[in-house]
Image (tube, rainbow, N blue to C red; front, side):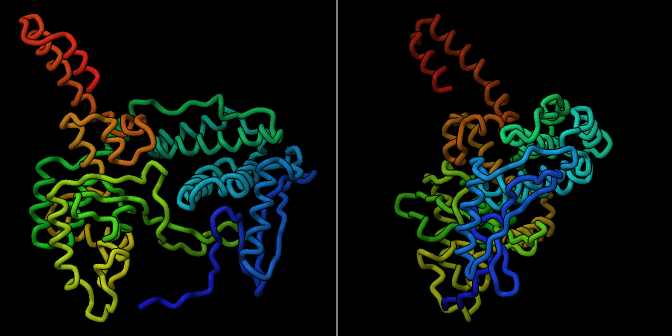
Length: 424
């Protein structure tokens, strides 16, 4: 049964800060600083959200292109004001809601509390480096978080230089922590499930067809969780063993005029990147599990569900109301399953890493792995799984030695050695 439509109050993409007040729609865009160095916001009004959205988007684009007057920053302008203006006016229109929330959280949690009240023109490399050292040593934050703090500050100051608001970027004189800890954290973060545990998980999942189907698909396709949650039957080609990935679950956020989150919602949107749109040839095991799940699915939803849960537009893994699952909802189910069977604490994303690791351990070309995972470039794949590649490449020396012996004994010709190297 179709759901009743409800009045739209959520801000769309690239629409700046839009909200409804006393029946009137309002939108704000930060356009620069006044002679006292205080942030100036321009407000637009309209009877509908779309009307205001067009005004705000046009103003944001003008500000981005430098067509709106931006005053040179004075000594009174704080780092907080600089960061707020950069994130809301210039960063938000260019990234997804989830990415923007990551930047906003970094700013609100780490940058503003430590540096927010310092005049932006007086921030020094020494002050930023002291914060980096504190986060690394005293607070013991992950290097990924420390890097995000530095990168966000760096982007904001580079942008301010482009607008001639400041003359120098104090971030350029700072350094990140030792690479050794960063590499160790990356290895831990992208850790695959051990071989023995993989077997135990799949064996325990035999008793629950929903869990069995979900974990088998995740482990042997490498889909992101958002892609898996949004998967519909129309994207599954049983005849050719192909799954098409062209959409994913994402989050949208709603903020008040002070920049505080007032609501969030899971929606179906585009994949993480354009390269994430892909068709993957999957194993017969995956297809067989999906067929079994398709037969059992009607019994897993409430009898009150009237729509056909097997139609091409319906999601493959619905909840018991026949609707799309949320990430948090399935994660809770998954954790209960893992705890009940004593299988450890492996996050759902580790199944994607397990898939990639299996392929690399089996000497599949990293370029092929890149395409299957939907990475935008090979550097992402090589960087993410650099801890696996040494084990893969360890075998190359043995292969080359064997080829050399065959060549010198006359059983193999030189061109075949070149072919082996190009494939590797």
